[in-house]
Length: 474
Ligand code: HEM
Image (cartoon, rainbow, N blue to C red; front, side, top):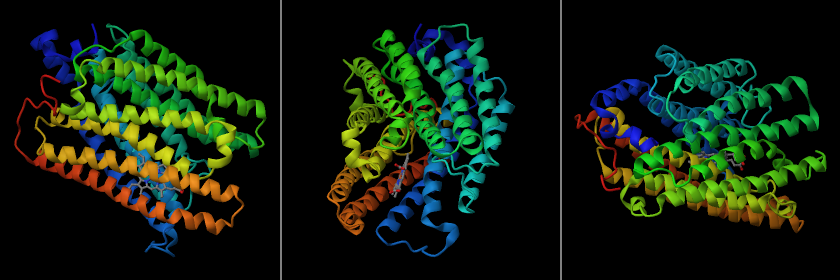
């Protein structure tokens, strides 16, 4: 049996379909989504403020609590722990019980984790604004919050592992990815937040911090993102994944090669060269692994290509996959020492970070929300046109922002390598930084449109059974 069969009520009969409904705590999934979208807006306001600072239009100049450096950390932390973590946790509360046909270990525990996680995220934001950030990029969570966050991650793992361990059916590749993510996220968080703080210092701490920041993307965001795509894509396309074998290659390839890559952030540093070369080689290995995953998803789409036009969630997913391919292609260039000479420390890297975080993983999560919100509320979308606006504003703004920052990075690199004064590089950056503000405003407007659409949908009448924007033929 594959995932699409499980989802179809005709395959499991009316009683078990009702059981399936009872397995999911819909209200909680919605709460997670509301929290995620709130932090997305806060984070984007931070990004906009930082972008305005760089074109010298910061109206909050001189207010220490709201200084751009602190907003920058708020921007990245609110995205990672506020938006992405909440959106993932909400979606896992939908996907895992449905895949395993078992509820999570304890619903009260789920609500406790939800509340505790919001306390962690809000305290992190307050701590950062008060100047208590820990000196680890993306691990700026003040040190006194770290043990609570780690305990939260442990409880998340226990709560979700229970249904997976008790599942009687087949072990879907999504479940492999989820289980790995629970273990890896816990270990990655512990490594990045405790080892540089208490155990090692200097270059060693730098190497660990590099490993942490990259593993946070590769061992927390990536396995959850891919696991959810392996769950939702076959269901929406109503067919099994193209190759089960390739999906396993992707999983084990990620497990073997990803953890070794972190040092590619620190090429040309005093970290021993054999470690730097090791990171370069494992990054190239991951490019091949990623290629297998992408081939598998496009193989699955083969024969159903029209779904990208007619089925909005599928369009979000496959836009993210194309952009994933672009980011990985970029990685193949930027991991070489030759290329790093030009682009290191430039906006090229910032463009790359936005492409992967918003263009790929956020777009997947926004596509999932577009699909699930009608199912969670029993109400059809208030406006399909607004859903389309949400998609187009998000997709075009990220492409513009990415191209703009990539160009800015190249100009900055050329300016530095031709030994110009520092001011020269900031002057050539100005037009690009202005374009970034407009791209950011478009991205922000897209999310406001989405939130307005959710608000109108929730305040509208119940229209069950809601299908969530996918035509029966897609
Ligand atoms: C309103 C839209 C946004 C604007 C205007 C914006 C702007 C910025 C700015 C100005 C920076 C600092 C760059 C620097 O230090 O030179 C930044 C960093 C970053 N932003 Fe955004 N951002 C936006 C949305 C997002 C979203 C939606 C995400 C993720 C889903 C994101 C992820 C990141 C990351 C990961 C970094 C760190 C990049 C690095 O250190 O290389 N941003 N952003």
